[in-house]
Amino acid sequence: MSSEVLSQFVSARDLLDAYEVLATPAEIHGVLAGLLCGGCSLQHDEWLSEFLELVNDGHPMPAAVTEWLHELFNATLAGLLEQSGIELLLPEDGVTLEEQLIAVCDWSQAFLAGFAVVQQDLSKASEELQEMLGDISNITQLEVEIEEESESEASFYVLYEHLKLGVMMAFEEFGQHPQPERKPTLH
Image 1 (cartoon, rainbow, N blue to C red):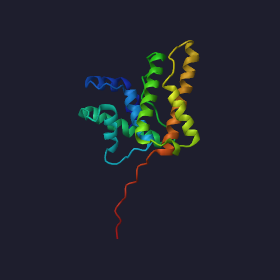
Image 2: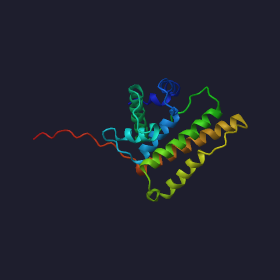
Image 3: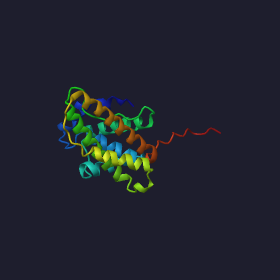
Image 4: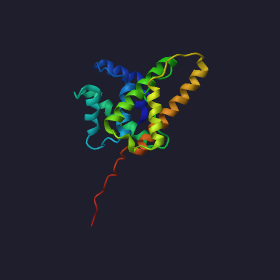
């Protein structure tokens, strides 16, 4: 599965706008990542019903959006399984740092919502993960004020990498891994 879907924020936004989906690509990706990191089932699209309940009051999405959701889900799972880690679906270059920060805040809030749907007992989480989830919660409340551009960009990069680390930690502790396909045994 190609991770190209994770670098196509504008086309994702256009798709969602065309079908009047009220969530942003960042929010949708955050929810999917949260569901995966919380330990949602990977069997028979069970994740989709949890996703739809959270994002669309349980109503189905148009076929084109559902197809995109499957691509995004698979690319997100692949990123979580790779050692290089997950990439977040955020606005691409050419937007202001303020817009990127708003998208990170939205992504983080959506991640926590998706995670909480599946993983409701945080006492099972390691102390490090509980602290990291607290950090992600703090990200949702960032004040978006840009003072010095170059310093702010460096801070944004650190924030982005810290968020990715937290997501990977959550997946390590609670995420489901696909079962390898069993090949028939010949006797």
